Image (cartoon, rainbow, N blue to C red; front, side):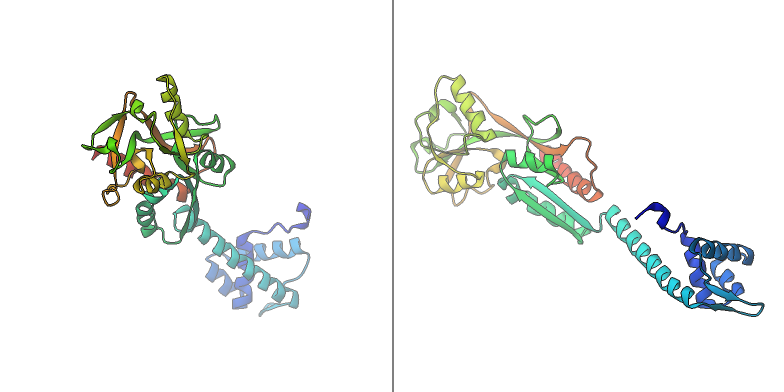
Length: 309
């Protein structure tokens, strides 16, 4: 379709044709549209000139719509109706009342605190669909980079050039120890990384951010860690530790408030003390929808309030 094939008609002119068809009088139509009769006549003449057809047969006493005019009025009504619906829909999107957001994050954040945040978010935005994509760090980064997710929540220590990170909180690393294990005796508040050198460890994959962080710290101290069981999701480390399989290392944000029926003990890693930086991950320069911006603000406010508590 060429631009020259599209009639150059204004919304006001479509309304003029519709008003004349409904009222059958220039006087009544002009009063309905709150305009003058000469202005209404000029608008109608322009429409007929652009279309190249006669829409109304005029006489000194009445205005009678032609068959072509009747067909055009049906088209005009449909166009005006669709325009009204579109504007209403766009306003709903702009005011965060309709739409969809996709969040990419890791399983522990998806379990807590995200459900509570989603509940609060949808209380005031019930028509917005929320999608959560759970994955490892490299999957979160790829989802945000590719546009599959509006934003991500993950580790912002080392991000690609095209992505921006905004700090939400720093999380210290803890050793999770089964209560039956000798290292859990007395429930120490902290534990040295070197004490784990010969222990059976439940760990994340070798290419994960957490695994690289702990392996690098051990290597700097002159030893290596014994990774006996590897799982894809951080929450699975909790289950294996609770079952007594071995010791796990997790950030504080991945540890539930109640330590699962007292089945495990958490001791902060010391010498060296290690931590990760959890934050919002966004694509640099990409447009952010009002719905996504609303969720980002809610997450940021919640994390700030937790830090200040």
